[in-house]
Image (cartoon, rainbow, N blue to C red; front, side, top):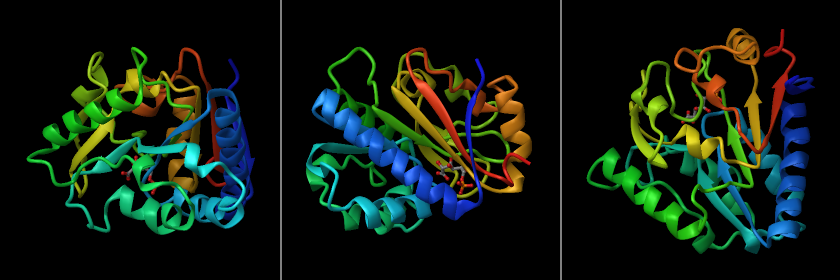
Length: 238
Ligand code: 6PG
């Protein structure tokens, strides 16, 4: 199947078009399901999109029906600015009326990253009644090495078939991570990759060509009953 790639002029264009698409997905999910469950991406690329989403849609989306999760997190103490949660609060969640009870961060204060993963899975089980949590929307980034969320090349996390969240190790600081697993990510109804920069072009091209997920984990994102849209700037598709 031909990948759905939306080429954006630059990061600003990606942010604007991506924010409009995220808003539409949120509205559609609430309309059809009564709520929207979204797993946010971390890193830097989503920042501008989150800021645009807050600026444009703080007052005209059903935020009280939106439940916010994360695809992965750096296992550093709550309040540490390196957390994906910190970035999302700074750019989006502190600027929209999403109830605190609807925001489900991955713990940074558990006894270990494995314990944090278990706690996060327990949170997911409370929030989802299905056999697998089916997120209405998952936002993902792409690393130059083909990683996505905190699923890194060669990681044993790539082989996980039963746990919903696991601890993982990144090749760069912060090394200790918690990540959703491929079965959960592949249960999503809609997945948006957010990719910007020439340094991602090789990985993106190889993933779209059908690379081995053990080598380029983003290639493992193949939802059985869901759509994948790549929002990429011109540099990333060069
Ligand atoms: C993280 C993210 C990670 C990120 C990619 C791309 O915790 O950093 O989960 O998977 O999405 O590394 O990051 P950029 O968008 O900053 O290039």
